[in-house]
Image (cartoon, rainbow, N blue to C red):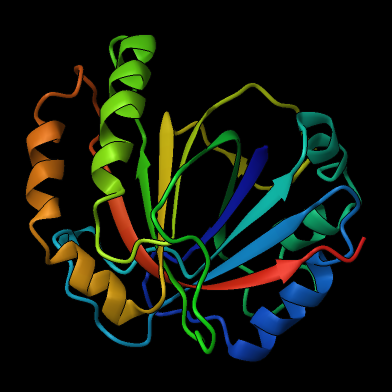
Length: 235
């Protein structure tokens, strides 16, 4: 599985994407040929207590589009495509003028004890993490991280999904800026409260204990809690 990430950021921290514009994006991306699912991320209206609040409020808006293979993803990023228009903010005032970046990555899914949200869940929340890099030895980094960290993540209370994304070469004609973070992660919970509860648990101590064992890397990391809207493909 391949994931395309598009991130819309505002240096002033004052911009907000309105709910009707999120709905408009959902309508735009649903028919993209070859896409299997889209996830739309928006900042939380409420403050969530988590260990990395100093990382800031995060992007104004973000997308994760899933594709079954790289070729389907690349086809969706041609000039004149829906994604090219979206990256340029065409027709969506709330996205115009923002700093837009994109990256294509391999999706690595890991097991959780209970997958999916219970009936009645209305505010699923994702904890988005990225490591800009670089690592001194990417193979050593990936080997350690993939073999150790997901097993600890699985012990977070009520975590519904664990995914880790690693780098890949790709081609596109999008007008937005390409980035090449060495890794991204996503943990999904039923609500902002569930996320806050998990990150206040003792599991975070085990995460930090493993963190100090990571192979050498630069660039630090960033953590952002985001409300998550799932859009099924209609193409």
